Every structure is written in structure tokens, then in C-alpha cells.
Picture: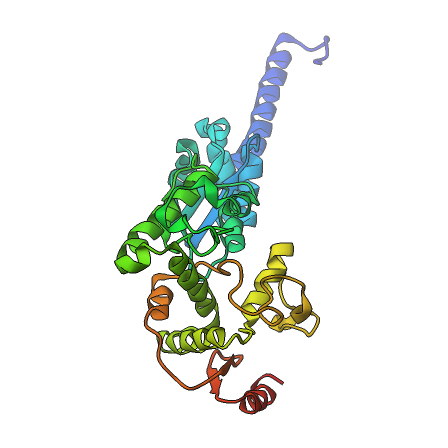
Length: 356
């Protein structure tokens, strides 16, 4: 407050100095802000790369700050670009426009282009289902991608009667395991679990069923037998040569009414109880082998009640073209090599040599 005893000229000088002081204070505050904004906006057109492809799910009611932090946490958005990304969203008015859904991100982006992806909204998602995936694996992958709720695929796979396909006509079919054809699929954000399964079954019909000999097509039980066998072979061997050898061994063991004794069936039996189950240190224990389950091929003779994986076309074709041999036993080394034996004694020696 100026002194009331000041002359008019002194008052003018005081007010002038007051204005200069306010201006200097304004500059002191403004200059760092301008420098910071310049730094922020200089990064807007800076490109960054997302590689390999990453999928992120934006949930309903997540704000732009939460979304930006999630993108950094998932190592999609570089942390040093996060402030610029947030400021751009605010200034551009796009902060409240970010849409929920699943996003598959890969490639080079500027912050402007990156922000627009979330304003435009989620597009179709491309998902690759590898050969040998089980319904448990498929369920986990699709739920992580935000396409389904966890457990939906597992539940529907136990209801084969809901789907009308000629290869599902056998009365022995209790699960869709084995018929969810491994491939690369494109799904819309609104696709239901039922539609996903139906698309995979239709793919099986086109690429597998219609390529089978007519006599096999007309025999639902033969289809089931070979798909179950292929699902085991897919898990047991990595190369076509080994798959054909193993297929022949397993068929002859079935004919002799010998237990198949396949470790992959034990793992599947445990996963039915707990989809996240894994053998400790990658090896089955004696206790693991004692599980009471129709899928335990150590305790039960014959094939398991259903497939234990979804085999690829190569494994299915290998089962129909086995390599005749005189081995009765085999094991896989930690490196993936298959060691064949003609007698139980040879097999036990191989176990001592490669697995102990």
C-alpha cells in the first residue's frame, strides 16, 4: 500500500516500479514454465518403437493419467516421454476421449499418432495360437488380450454339444480339446468366447477334416482316435521324423494293451485340477505320477478320454503316416533329443544316463 504522504510524482514513480516488479516476478515464474513446455513439445514428434508386439487392456473408468502410467509400466511408452504424452493429451483435449478395450501395439509411433490410437479406439486383435496349445493355454492368452473373461474358453470347451460339426458326432467326445485348430486369427473386440471357438472349429473343418480320406471323414470315432493320438505326439516330439516314430510306438503299445506312460498326459491331468499347475523344476515327481485321473496313462491303459492339446496340421499328418520301427520305449533328453529303446532294460539305462 503506497504512503498517503507521497507526492503525485513520487506516487507515479512508485507505481511504475511496482509494475516493473510484478513484470519481473511474472518472468521469473513464466520462463521456467516456457522452457519446460518447450522441452515437452519438442518430444511430441519424437518417435519411439514398440517391439515385439505388446497387448495392453484399457479398462473402463481408467483416466488418462492411469493409462499413461500403465503404458510406461508395461514398457510400451518410454518413461521419459510420459510427461509430454500427458501434457499433449490435456492441451489437445484428448484426455477424456481415450477408449477402453484391447490394443495390439507394434511399430514406430510419434506421441501424436500414439495418442490418436487410443482416441480412435481398439481395432481387431490378431492372435496366434501355437501348435500344442491346450484349452488352458488358449484361455490364458485370450483373457490376457482382453478378448474374454478368464475361464470362458475352458468352460465352453467342455460343452461340445453346443457346436454342430460333422467331426464332433462321436459319442465319445467329451471336450473340444484337439479340435481348436492352431493358427493366426483376427478377432474383433466384440467377439464372444462362443464365436472364437466356432471360428477355430470352422478352421479345423476346412484345413483338417475336409483333407481327410472319405472313409475317415465318415468315421467320427476314427477322427477322435487320431486327433487324440496326434495331440500326444505333438507334445512328445518336435520333429516330423520323431513324431512318426513315436506315433508308431504308441499305436503298437495300444494294440498290445500296454500303458502308454506319456508324461504329457500326467501334466494335463493336473491342469484339469489347476490350469496354472506346473511340474517342479520341469520334472514330474513320483507323487505327480500317482494322480487318480483317467488321463493318467501310467495307471490306465488305452488313450486318454480326450486330446491333451490342439495339434497342428503337421502332427496330424504324421500320425496318418507313421514310420514303422521295432522300438517300444522312448524318452526325451533335456535338450529335446529322443532316445529310443527296444527293451525295458535299455530304456531304464537311458533314464539313468539322460534323466538322472
